[in-house]
Length: 227
Image 1: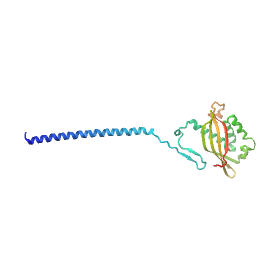
Image 2: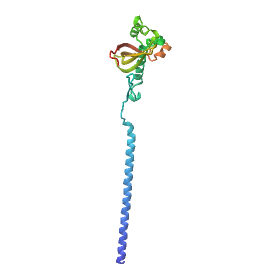
Image 3: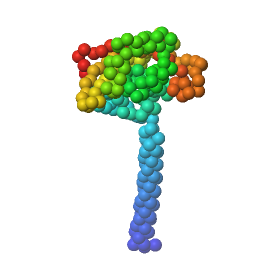
Image 4: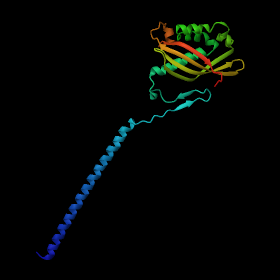
């Protein structure tokens, strides 16, 4: 074999070696790239899975410019309040509106309904309030006035068992029918309550107070400074 042929053969052999190395390098690069893509995909999937577990709690409150009432704006379930607590807030507010509001044409019904929520001692005090010159129908001269109640705040806490305490701030709007004139005042209400579900009630009475929400004490104080 001539020297030229040897040089050609060596060159071809060297070229083959280079091509093989290049091919191996390409395969290695693709494997690394594929592994990187798989790891990136797994990381993204992990983030997506974990996102629901990471929450930022944001509380939104609203203040009514007319009444001054402040309210939590998020859904009840987001605030982790049991349905019983939410219902207690509603029942306490309903009771106070019935007791502190006034409309001559619904007075008898409201009078009867309030008593379905009263314990014996609270009911005695309530009935006493309708005797003499301080009775609501005397103060408001029968149908001459209407009193609307706005609940400004409604805060509940445990009291001496089995009672709970509701501390409320309310605004009364007293409107004279003849000229539509209005005056307002603000009161602080403290009441304790409990549930007596087995209290003897008729079907119609049970429709008014289905859970036996009973007010065991009631105190009201007028704010001298107003709102």
